[in-house]
Amino acid sequence: MNKNTSPDFVSQLCPNCGLCCNGVLFADVELRKGDDVQRLAELGLSLEKKGRQRAFVQPCACFDGKLCRIYNERPAYCRAFECGLLKRVQAGELGADAVLEMIAQAKRQVGKVCELLRCIGSDDGQLALSQRYKRVMSESVDLSGGKASAELPGKLMTTYRDLMQTLQGDFLT
Image (cartoon, rainbow, N blue to C red; front, side, top):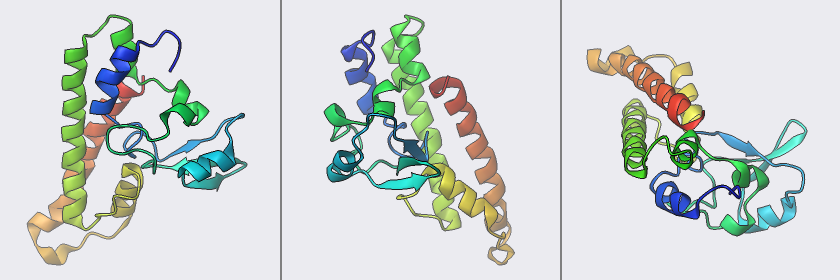
């Protein structure tokens, strides 16, 4: 948390969101200089090599659905990250209630994408959403299940696109 970040906004908004930790915004998070790799592994992060860097996969193993279990010892990237909505609340551009509704809307979109993924046969919640989507979309369409089944990948594509537009416009700016 930056020194200009109000803990009130963080404690009010972040536990209602979690999209930066649950595999929706990021597939992995690279460690930065100064991160204690051994300590982070001991705390439960699933670390892997990513080129020359070390990274931990998302969804984060230390995220309990609302809060970070290792918040005081979290990696540098996590300490520095502030989503676009948090920045807009801090700048006085949006009120917390409006942001909470935007978070709820994004989470409903995530739910629709996840439901479509389940209908298509991808129920692996241990993978980041983008990885689940890519895996499903790289598979052949099964036309034996009838018209409704054959239309699912197209519905998934448009629903995922809409979610990505929301995430890019509101959370990653």
